[in-house]
Image 1 (tube, helix red, strand yellow):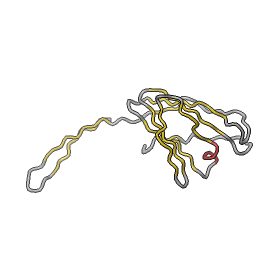
Image 2: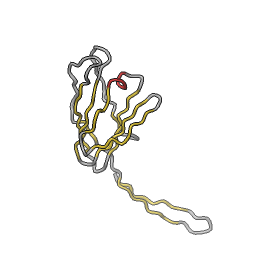
Image 3: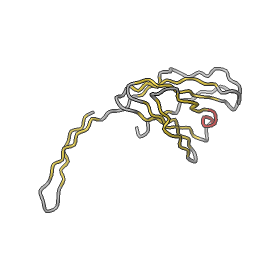
Image 4: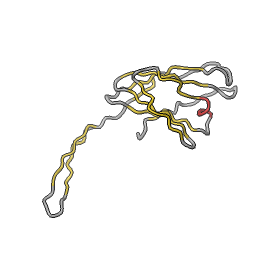
Length: 138
């Protein structure tokens, strides 16, 4: 999306100035290559099950992503990003607040990148959930 406009600046006691403003706005386009993540049968509070997740950044820019885990859900205790396996993906920081743990990632432009997702269930039951991965401020 292109922006091409002019801002008129009025200066007291002088004539106005027209300031041209131009920008090319690029919307981030990131996809998860995996159609689903099946951890299979795993023991309760045993060894964690790990699965590789592949992200695809189709944008011409770096994209920041957030894995948001709310503390009042089983995901905060059972799900974690165990490692970043790729030079195209950077673990920027981990932020913790009262109700939320946020893992901040950055993926390079026009590439695929992988990370390991780890799951340790607390109880013996079937689990189904969406991966809470967001593009901040989008």
